[in-house]
Length: 472
Image (cartoon, rainbow, N blue to C red; front, side, top):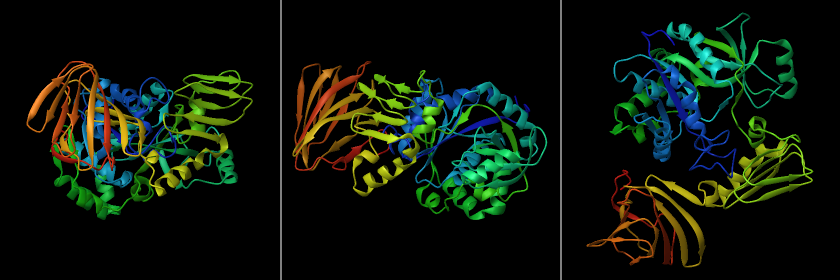
């Protein structure tokens, strides 16, 4: 453990646009919320990896406002009840995000060591990482801004590099280097003293704010204004949108680490992978004797070095070095050495205003989820799940009517001035324009089928009058 006089506060950075692992990861449900490298999600694994270092402290999470309930629920599932979740109204990269976390960490009068961790990385050797945090703590307590450099396994061109001064343990950073070409990366490995930039940091909250104020006072001023004007809603800290949007977007590397004379690095060999592509996920996945990694119902015949993720049965026959990902509403087939171009697919989907870039077919909401199982001109059929005790907003629609049929559980329905319960095999009609609400008063999951009919069925055809989730 670090010096007991200085508490350790894990900070989980939970941003991300969900483009590199499409179609499994999407903007509304990026990879940190997915169980890609085991049974738990990457966010959950990130916290559990360092929970033992934090004593009684809960994690401090910086998340997109749209992901707030996902983050809270997934942490609750691993025993965290009251994590402070700082909500970014817009993305502004890591320098402002960490500044907001530092201000929140110091709000109660403490000045902890911030262990800043992206929530979507894999670390195979968690014990070695915890040992590294302990080893780096004295330098961070004395005011160094410590980053963890990954001992390189290959001349990787997809990472930035850190050149460290010779020595052992924590040592001074000589320079940060942009992603190199292949020849330069090979030279770095041959020369030694170069490490992959992991994006993980250990630093004193006040020291980071001090250095940010030295080099980027505009960022610090904007974030401080956003924090001072933030609204507190339970565990959520909602940064002021206008003030935070006024902050320049910049990474901690550019804003602080490349400029400060307090940057230090601890080289580590911890089985790290940023899972930045499907080929990277293949690297960290269990493989059979032919080098195939598979998730779900996958059969591989005469196939090698491929990755397959399936919801339904997928068969690979006579293929090599392929990635095949099958979801409810999209299929990706790519050569493993071309998977970085998946982001171009997402860009085209966004340009065409197709929902596949943002949403899965099953869309998660704070009250549960809905799955669009069928639609055509004038109608849409959804399967809706409502968690025990949850309620949707009191709302109305201008363009559609709805018909609800309960499949499982009890539904409490508000329809204008009427409130009544429905049980399995019972139904209700919600006319166009009626104020209505759906609740689950039971202790089990409520499941129902919703049939929408009308001339426009978009999700934006909604007027909210009351909402327990702050969306009205």
